[in-house]
View 1 (cartoon, rainbow, N blue to C red):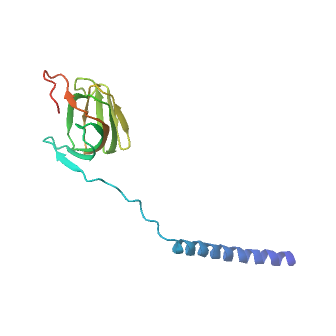
View 2: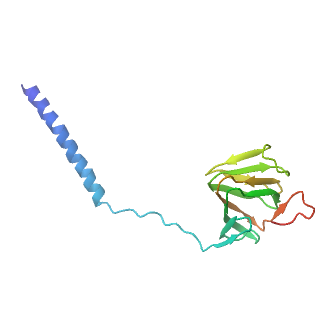
View 3: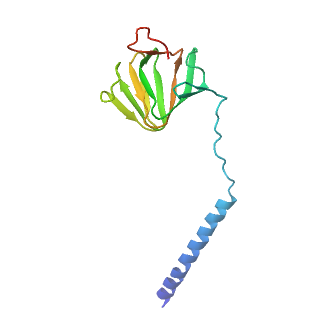
Length: 161
């Protein structure tokens, strides 16, 4: 009988202890101060909208000025960047959407093309001919060291973008 009584007591105490333990955890959660979300720091940024519909937001520095720059490019669906080069390396992170990037100096959607989705990181070396297009709206963060110019390839004057 003693063993049975101990087992019965244990069976009755376990749920009671579990309930009290759960209540203690709930009370601890309620008593803990709320942790604020991290503050997002966005510098005052100048935006430009190009005739193509592309919007550049300059977060740090400027691409055409000496020093480090960070810009966000918002590209509309259907945007096509013709083959071009940059005189310095650029580092691109896809924030939203999908970017199609081709390497080469001729527009070719079937050639050396890679699709990059959100979170992708792309390094485009200086003087690497490339082109891009977007089937959907896309946001890219572009970083590098300026002055960093863009020159179209296969054009006699290699006009700046």
